[in-house]
Image (cartoon, rainbow, N blue to C red; front, side, top):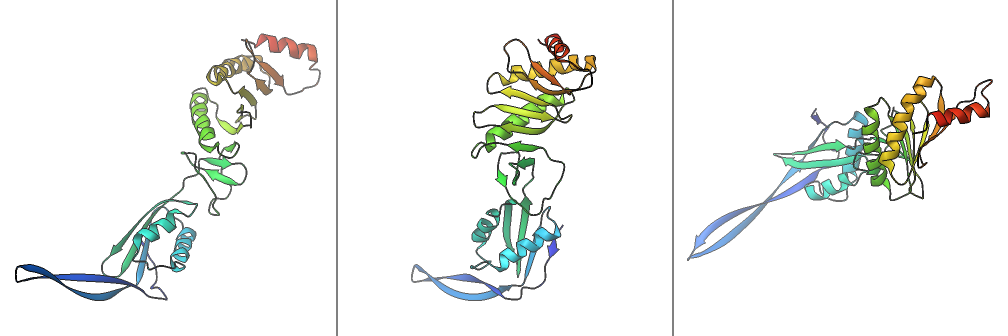
Length: 247
């Protein structure tokens, strides 16, 4: 959608130099004349909301440079956290056209920001709430965590699971929580094999008609399963069930 905004309260001028080439005595002499034109309109396109368009307008009005400097305008806009990319062009006779591509949030990041599919973290006031997974990790591990999330989620979806929370701790150990609230520890080695253990043991747990709370796959030949406590559910039986579902 192309939104033509109101005429600016202040005027921006673009200087255009016209060159007239005149051949005199075998040499070329350039006669230079200048005239000015005003930028009276700005059009903002892209998948942006009214609030985002207002924000872009305020940014442009606050620039300390002429809007004719389209490279500078582009640099300023792409430096805004929630903007992924921006194309800027001048349209004759008096219009600046800006096409904005906003960032697309894949998940929340560390409780105070968002993260996109390329592992770029950004903050924005235009995304509030929403049904997004939660990713955690130390500073500098954003791309690593996003890579783990995408690979693990693809493998889990085939079996009807998906990640609600993914945590990478300071030691590089992975843990996730699925849509049923089950916490799964994968550790930092043999992650693919341990994920397969989780998927296999999940099928066996469903056959037992019991509700797991935590599954630890970091054992050499099996897994440890903690079940949600229920009345009459004693420690001996818990241990026996853990052995039954071990691989």
